[in-house]
Structure formats: structure tokens, C-alpha cells
Image (cartoon, rainbow, N blue to C red):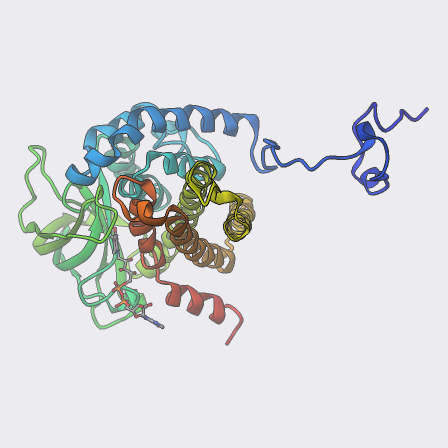
Length: 421
Ligand SMILES: Cc1cc2nc3c(=O)[nH]c(=O)nc-3n(C[C@H](O)[C@H](O)[C@H](O)COP(=O)(O)OP(=O)(O)OC[C@H]3O[C@@H](n4cnc5c(N)ncnc54)[C@H](O)[C@@H]3O)c2cc1C
């Protein structure tokens, strides 16, 4: 016998037939406050979200202002390593947790509570850019020397692709690695390197055949410091760079002058570095998209609170229709970008290599983050322009996302070319 609709949960097909004029207890109400988790996440994922978010709120967020002035301290990455947050997606045999890709997604979302884009960037350079190619391409010896301490946060890594004369055009790099017996000798310079001044080692993109473009590129893991913490011979930090935003993160120009690296520190195959780094860039772009969406979401939340409290002309500013519509636009953009990221992550996690979709997600998420945060500043009025309000910092930090890990224009090229034109 069928139960009456008021006494049981309605099946989706039945919902369409509910009479909206029926008595109150039979009317379906909009579920605006639903906390239902997304289908890609399990209870275990949500457990991580709870614990990591509370760690970020407790041990990172209170230091956001201090880190803007002094950079985030190495000790916080070590702490993250102790808590298992760097190794979430790496195999247990190397000290990781053996989790799927969704753990990385949740980590990116949790980091958005830190109030420090610069810290988040330094963290994900380690967890999602430097260590994955080492795990994927490194020999057992390389994994023991860099992946294991990297997961513990005891060694900090950086990624060296960009050069003063070549950013988007990766095949145009000029840093060379010349074979000399059992070693390679590295000469050249790298630009805009995150964690560059503090890093113990770097995943370095070089040319082993300077006359070739894509097929002349080879990756190496290069020590930047010796056991005493001094720069290795031939390596120097040419400049610590001043930036518009991401002040908590160090960004450096690096110089390599006859730096010797053992041949066994090659990552992957000689001449295949372009294809290896193209794979790395997919993870970098997806985590960038996650950061953009969740950064926008945090600003939305703070601005919503503000719009409910701030009064003008005798009422909360959120009650003006024009402001309400701004929230409606922002929420819709955030939701579209989030679903795009989740669906792409779902495909990635299921073994696909969805380069077009990753590129679209990165492009769209970073664009809407800039639009949303700009609107949040507008809603804050003059206060939005003040450093004491998080939206001011978020605005400067978010702008990088349309440049780093590939510019908007390069993303459009990748997407456009994927259609064979
Ligand atoms: C704060 C910060 C941190 C960074 N961290 C790192 C890091 O850790 N490691 C690293 O290797 N790099 C890092 N980068 C570098 C970043 O990835 C590059 O800045 C980015 O890839 C763009 O390269 P570029 O700056 O040389 O610009 P260019 O390549 O010179 O581009 C300049 C302009 O020309 C456009 N353009 C270029 N080619 C095309 C084309 N084919 N079609 C249409 N337009 C085009 C670009 O879109 C852009 O608008 C960082 C950058 C910043 C600012």
C-alpha cells in the first residue's frame, strides 16, 4: 500500500506531481539551506574537510596579516606534513595517505579559509605541482630523497619552468643541461619561481638539446641547498621579487651557473620533458581552479554578512534589489564554476585525461573569481578598499590566477586548438 506523500520521502518522479496549492505539510519547500554533500565526496572526504578546515582556521588564518609582511614560515608546512595534509594523495609506502584525487580538491577548498592566497600557493606548489611529477616519474632513489621528506614538509620544493625570456612559450626556454660524465651541468635562469628563495630543491625544466624545441626538453630534480642549508655551488637567488599580491609567498628569480647535478636526478626520459611538464600543468591548473572557486566563495560569504549588517538609507544594503541581484549573479557564477571543477575532477579521478575541460575550468574559475571579488569590493564600498578587510587582499591575490599556470590567452588557445582549428 502506498504511504501518503506527507509521511514519506518523495521519489524524484513524484515530486513533479505535488500540487503546489495543497495544504502546507504537503507542499515542497525550496531547500536553500541544504548541506547535502556532493556525490563525488564520501563521508571520509567530509571528515577530512572538517579536520583540515578547523586546522586552517585555528593555526593559519590568525597569522594571515603577519605572513603578508614576513612570508609564511617553513614550520607551518612541516606542521601540515605531520598532520598528513601534504601526503593525502600519495602512496602510503612514501608516507602518504593513499587517497584519491578528491582529497586534493578538499585540501584546496580548506586552504581558502587561511585568508592568505600566498600561503595557499606555496602549499599547493609543494603538494600539487612539485611532488606529483616526482611520484609519477622519479626513480625509487629520487622518491626516497625528495618525495618522502617533501610529504613530511621537511624539504620544500619549487618548480622552475618560466624564464626571463620565456613563459607561455615553454619550448622557448634557454636553460641548458649539458652531459659531462655521470653528471649534467646546468646554466641559465628561472623567473617568478614560487618558494624559490626558500626551496631546498627544484623540479627544473631544461634543454638537453638547445637546438630542438619541444623534443629538446628534459626535467631534473636539482638540490638548491646543501646539508648545512647553504646554496649549492653555482646556484644563487638573483632577486626576491616584489608583487601586487600573494605577499605571503616568496617569488624569486634564480640563477644557475655550472650547477652540477648527478645524471640519476633526471626526472622521466631525456627529451620528453615537455610532455611530462604538460601533464604536471594539468594538476596545476585544476588545483588553481579549485583555489579560484573557493576563494570567490569565501569572499561571497564575508560580503553577504557585510550586506546584511551595513545600513544605508535606513535599511541593510543587501535589501536593495540591485545589491541582491549582484549576490544572485555571483552565486550563480560560483556554482557553475564549482560544478565544472567537480565534474572535471570526477573524470580525472576516473582515469581520464580531460585536458580541454581542465583548461576550461581553469579559465572560467579564475575569471569569475576576479569578477566576484571585484563585485565584493564594490558592495563593501570604501571599506572594500581598506587593507583591514579581507576582500582587498583577495582582490590582489586572485588576479594572479588569470596569469599563473598559463594565461587566459593560452587557455583559450588550448581550448580552441582542441577542436582541430
Ligand atoms: C606570482 C607568480 C608566481 C609564479 N610562480 C611560478 C612558478 O612557481 N614556477 C614557474 O615556472 N612559473 C611561475 N610563474 C610564471 C607564470 O606561470 C608565467 O608568468 C605565465 O606562464 C606567463 O608567462 P610570462 O609571464 O612570461 O608571459 P608571456 O608568455 O610573455 O605573455 C605575455 C602576454 O602575451 C600573451 N601571449 C603569449 N603567448 C600567446 C599566444 N600564443 N597567443 C595569445 N597571447 C599570447 C599572454 O597571454 C600574456 O598576456 C609565476 C608567476 C607569477 C606572477
